[in-house]
Image (cartoon, rainbow, N blue to C red; front, side, top):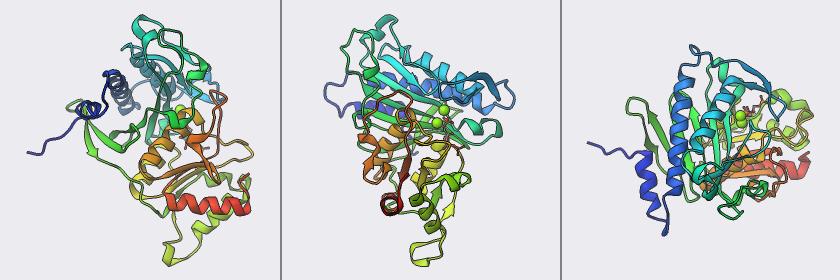
Length: 338
Ligand SMILES: O=P(O)(O)OC[C@H]1O[C@](O)(COP(=O)(O)O)[C@@H](O)[C@@H]1O
Ligand SMILES: [Mg+2]
Ligand SMILES: [Mg+2]
C-alpha cells in the first residue's frame, strides 16, 4: 500500500534539516492548518450558511468587506494567537498590525502577514478563492511588544510563505525557501496529504492572466505584450490562451502547474497597482522564485527586493514562468511600464 505523507509529518521531517530547530515554526504551521480546515468547512457550505454577501463594513483598502473576509480573518487571528509562537499579525483586513501579548506570545519569535480571503469577488459565485500567508522572524527583541518594523521587512527575509486554495479540492502550497510542495486536504481523514511534491514553474507557458477590461488604462508596454500574446505564431505557440479567474491564488496555482503569467499592472483606477505588497505579492513572489519562476513590479525590479514603507502599500505585479517574465520585461523596457 502506498504510504501517504501528511503535512504534519512532512514538516516534522523537514524540521530535522534545521539544526537547533525548536519546533516553534512547526507549531505555527499547526495553527495555519487548523484555521484553514475551519475556513474550508465554512466555504464548502457557503450557500447554506449565512456566510455569503457583504459584511456591511469597508476595510482599510476601501473595499466592501465580505462576510467571509471577516470570518477568515478572525479564524486565522485566533488560531495564530493560540500557541505562543507568534507575537503579532498584520492582515489585509486590519487597519493596523495586531500585537499578541497574552500568555507566552510576547516571547514568540515570529510575525505573520495574511490575506485571509483572496478573490473575495468570487465568494458568492462559487469560484475558487484562497488564503495567503507570509512568515518572518521578528527583528524587535523577544519579550517586548512587536513593532511596525517587524512587518515592514523585505520579502527576501521571509522564513516561509504559502497559500491555501479552496477550489474543487482544498490544497495548501507552501515553501520554506528551498522548494515548493502541495498538499491536498482529505476531509474524510481531516488531514492534508502530500500530493504535489517539488512543484516547479514550467520555464515557458502559453497562458496569460490579466483583467483585460482595464486594457485602455494599461501602460504601453503591457498593451504591446497583450497584442504579442494574441498574435499568430506557431513556433512560439501563439496565440496564447487567456485565463483569468479573478482570484490571484487560483490564477497563480494554475500557471504554476501548467506554465503561464499573471499580470496586474498599474491602471488609472490603481495608479500604483492593485495588489498588496506585504499580503499578496511578497508571499507569491517567494513561492514563485522557490519554484523556479520570477516575480517583478517592473523591468529588473524584483518584488522580494522592494523595501516596504507602509503596511497596505500596493505594487504592480507580474509573476510566472521565467521566459514569459523576460518577454514582458522587454516590452516594458521598450514601450514603457507606467
Ligand atoms: O477584479 P480585478 O480588478 O481584476 O481584481 C482581481 C484581483 O484582485 C484580488 O481579488 C485581490 O484580492 P482580495 O480579494 O484579497 O482583495 C485578487 O485575488 C485578484 O487577482
Ligand atoms: Mg487578495
Ligand atoms: Mg483578501
